[in-house]
Image (cartoon, rainbow, N blue to C red; front, side, top):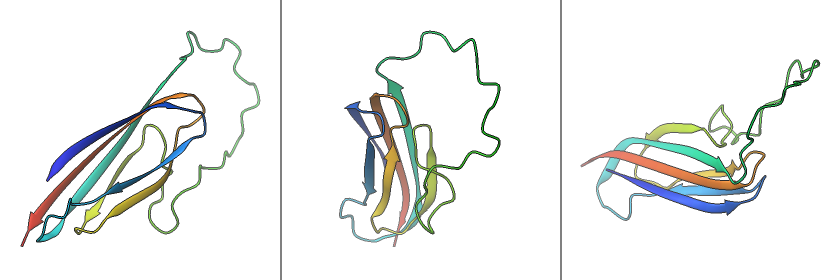
Length: 115
């Protein structure tokens, strides 16, 4: 069991990263859970929101791409992903930097039992 944090500095808008979680070669890991949280900060945050939002928003926007047959939510800044852990590598691909330049901090926690 444990928690790890990784911060990637200076990512550009639209950059995507892949995350792999493993048990570090610890024998006897049978089962557990994992949680991955993704937080991002902008290199140039907006000082004030727009005073004139659109009068015609998209009625049914399409979701961001998801991982096929694995989860039903997109991976992006602000996401938290939970799942079962069986000692094998867990790979999360294409975590999106959204629409700004900045830093991404990935925090992963794995809670496991042994046998």
